[in-house]
Every structure is written in C-alpha cells, then in structure tokens.
Image (cartoon, rainbow over all chains, first blue to last red; front, side, top):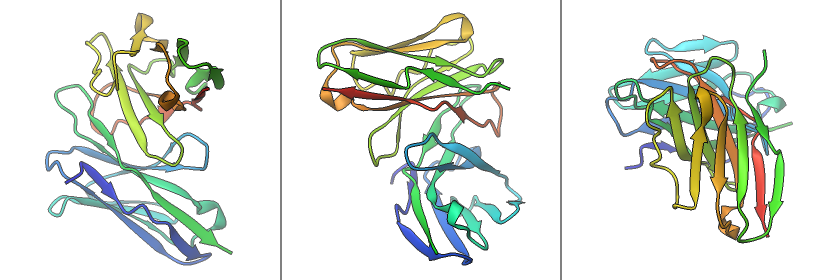
Amino acid sequence: RKEVEQDPGPFNVPEGATVAFNCTYSNSASQSFFWYRQDCRKEPKLLMSVYSSGNEDGRFTAQLNRASQYISLLIRDSKLSDSATYLCVVNNQVNRDDKIIFGKGTRLHILP
Amino acid sequence: GAGVSQSPSNKVTEKGKDVELRCDPISGHTALYWYRQSLGQGLEFLIYFQGNSAPDKSGLPSDRFSAERTGGSVSTLTIQRTQQEDSAVYLCASSKDPGQGREQYFGPGTRLTVT
C-alpha cells in the first residue's frame, strides 16, 4: 500500500456543483495532515490544515477519519478558479524530525 | 513578509555540466526541504534540513546530488554531471519549528532543462 494515495482524476465538475476527494494514508501513527493546491506550472500552496475535529474555511471543508485512515476535502459551490491539482500531505513526524509525504494529487476541472 | 525565493528561475545546461540551485527560506524558518517535480508528476522528496541536525538525505536519487545549508538559512542544491533525466522543476520549501500542524511554504521553483 502506498504511503499516501489519491485518485488522480481528472474530476470534471460543472460550475456550482459540490465535489469531494478522499486521500488514504498507510501509517496509523501519522500526526498531521494538509491539503495543498497546485495550479498548472506553479508551486504548491497550502489550502488548509486538517484537524481531528474537522474544519471548514468558506466553501472548503476538510475531514479526518483516523479509524479508516483517510482525509477528505469537500468543495461546495465550485468556481472556475477552483480548477487545480489538490495534493494530500501527511506528516509522519518522528521526535522533532518531519517525514512529510505528498500524494500525487487529484486534478479538478471546473466546467463552465 | 518575504516568501521563499529561489534562483535562478530557469536554467538550461548541457549534459555533463554541474549546476547549483539556490533557496532563500522565510526568515526564522528552521526547516528547509528540497523536492523535484517532473512534468505531470507528483513531488519527489530530495532532502530535508532541520536546524543544526544532520539532514535527511534519503530522497537524493544519486551521489551526483548534494545539498548544503549555510548558517541555518540559505541552501544550495548541487547536481554534478547533469543528465537529461535530471530535467525537472526543483522546489524548495520552508517551515517553522517542529510541532504538529507545521505547514510548508514553497518557493516558485527552478526549472532545470538538461540538453
């Protein structure tokens, strides 16, 4: 099983729809989780951290399910500008040293 | 404030030449990471520096690759005797002190083309 696994997509979604992605991770001791967004030919940028209790930022909601070892990202009322690749990131920190694993990303295309 | 900066933004080099890529992390960030990303692919971890600890070099693909971080700030990634398969975007990221919830901030990358 890969350390961090994502459906590569692409997800082709009409504007205004709701879309959700999952990301599974293999290390049950993983400690922190993030979603990053990467636009074409740009660097990744942090979208949101994922907290145990789940968290919401505007149209974006992130959830963590430790029992099943996955995190999710929900985008409501999708906009054309949401088209990007969404990267799942897991930190398997050991002592004070990071062990950060990036998923390969899920491509999202919002259709007008 | 200033973000992570990288130079050069683009580098074209001939096969067999050495190249140096530079990263200036955000001031005060103790952790620095190098990744590379080939076209249409995910991020490949290369090396990680944390404060004064020995770096985690487990991602370096061969002994042609090396990196150093001087004074806990600026880092240089060196690729010796470049090969065409080294062509990729090399991304640097930095983050604050260790702890859960640490977030990475990426530079714009250096696009390396080996001809």
